[in-house]
Length: 293
Image (cartoon, rainbow, N blue to C red; front, side, top):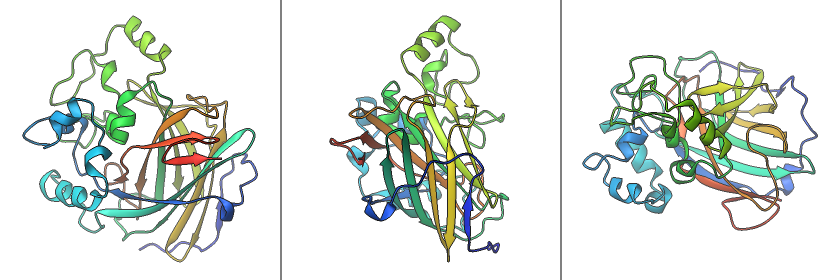
């Protein structure tokens, strides 16, 4: 594994004062390697046993709570043409959310994994955020954007990025290709809030923050996310934050949001990442997986 200094790393973007994390509730979640499973795979009877339930409106967690290790094992052995065997199939992660008058913070802690020797970045952490306009995000987390014809997927022939299915003129088992719906329909989708915001920090080794939107493709935006990171032993702790009123999704108390996480650990790249099932977030107070008080 590549040696990294055990020091505090701060992004060069202007970050707000950090919360007192010792007083913020934490929640453990388990991420897992999804192999080359796609949204189309989720919806295909005969390949995914829960396809009919998913098509009928069920969410992934309604059937798979606590099954991350099983899912990772199956994905690696049965649905991955080139599995990355050097890394474990699951990654335990601790997540904390906090806010102040104008900023939302998310703190993610996880242990490093064996060196995959694929990427100069030591790790990459991403969070997907939906404000309710993308129903598939609340049911399938990252799979809302992951299609069979995206780069490095079974039907992928081009460097096609993540995209959302409703932007395509026709979806098949192989994905939606590059033929989009008419401009007027796309404009109506955007106006309805369809689209997923992403936040990301890459450790190269200093943290580099990025953000953008996934709609008909993954589109970077002007950076409004700040990031810090530290490492102690083999444990990474990363904090992402942005102002409530910037970005694609306006963040307001009392509203529920869909969130999901993806982590490339141990110098892994691209699809060799760990992903979470869908989770919910609310600001202020209420019933959700995460509450930013």
